[in-house]
Length: 354
Image 1 (cartoon, rainbow, N blue to C red):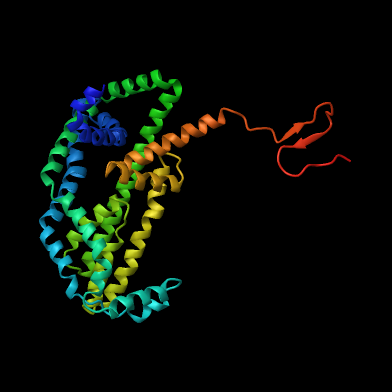
Image 2: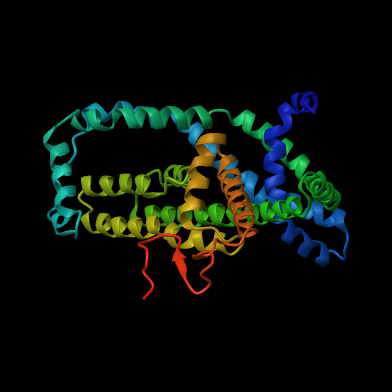
C-alpha cells in the first residue's frame, strides 16, 4: 500500500479534487442521467462539459488574470512609499461603536505622510503579494492538475457506483456499521461544504465585482478575481472593495465611495448568513466547527483543506457523540446501603434526612 501511494503520488492532488467534485455533484449526475434516458456515458459527457464551463474555465481565468497583471500589482506595492493617505471624512466618527477608534487610526496614518502607510502595511502586503503571485504564476501546473482532475472525474462519474460500493465494503471491514455510517457522513459533509463555500464565494465575488464596476473603480476585473481567491480562502471580499473605496475618496467621488463602502459591508457580512445556512442543509454542524474546519483545513492541507477540514471534524464529532451516547449517563443519586429510603447526591452539599 505504501508503494502504491508512492507511485500514485503525482496524481493524488487530482484524485482528491476529482473525488471531492464527483461526490459533491453526484445528485446532479443522477438528474442528468435521468434526462438522458438512463445512459450513463451521455450523462458523464454532459457533466464533464459542465465542469469545464463552471469550474475549470473560471478558475483558469482568475489565475491567469492575476498572473498577467502580476507586474502591475508589484508596481502598485512599490509605489506605496509615495502614497499619502487623505484625512478621514467627518462622518467616520459618527459610525456607532468603532467610529472614533477608526477615525483616530485613519488620522494617524494620514499624519505619518508619505511612507507612513507603507511602514504599517508593507509586511502584510509583501507577504500577501508574494504568496498570491507565487500561486498565480504556475498557470501551467494548474492546467495540468485540472486536466488530471477532469480525466479522473470522468472515470469516477462512469464507475462511481462500483467505487462507492468498494469504499463502503472497505469501511465495513474496518469498523462495521460505524464505518459505513462514517462514509455516508463524509459524503454529506463534502456536498454541504462544497455548496456552502463555493456558492458563497461566487455570490460574494459577483456582488462585489458588480459594485466596483457600477462605482467606476478601475481594474474591477482584477479586483473581482482577487475577491474570488480571498473568498475561497475565507478572508472575504472586503479588502479589495476597501481599496476601491479609498480610490474613490482620493478622486473626490464621495457619494460613490460612501455607497460602495455600505455595499462592501453588506457583501462582507453576507457569508455569515449564507454559508452556515447552505452547509447546514447537508450536515448538522455548529458554526464554530464549520469555521474551524475551513480555516484549519486550509492551513493544514492548502486549498483542498477547505473541504477536507470540515469533513474530518464532521465525522469525528458525529462518531464521538455516537460513542458517548452508547453508555447511559450516570445516575444523579446513589442509594445508601441498608437504608432504601435515603439517598445521597453524587455532587453538591450533603443532605440530612429529617
